Image (cartoon, rainbow, N blue to C red; front, side, top):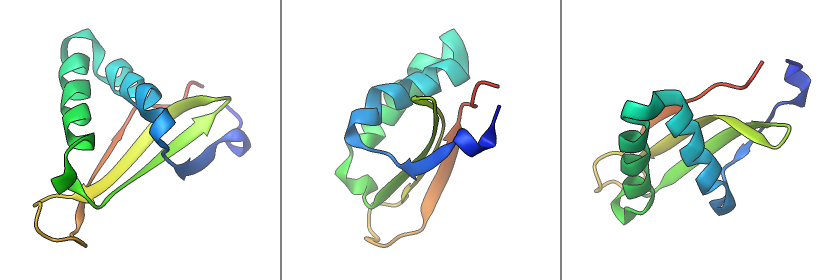
Amino acid sequence: MNTDSIQFRPARSDDRDRILAVHLDAFGNDEGPVIASLLEEMLDDPTAEPMHSIVAESNDMIGVRSLWRNIDGRRPSGTGGTTGYGGMPG
């Protein structure tokens, strides 16, 4: 893989389905749907704000995602948890 072709950027709302697909692929048929469902709930949870999501994209494919979010629902500038899933095809 040519790492020069990897773009890191903030996730957009139209990335949601592709981000969920990364989680499904990374965790397989048994755990993938559970993890994707938990992620959907978290993305829709206003107490998780602020939330900052970064994706790595290559050839219009998202292969890696990292998320920082408020972890206790009380601190508007709280420290976040970090998750990263998936891998770029190589």
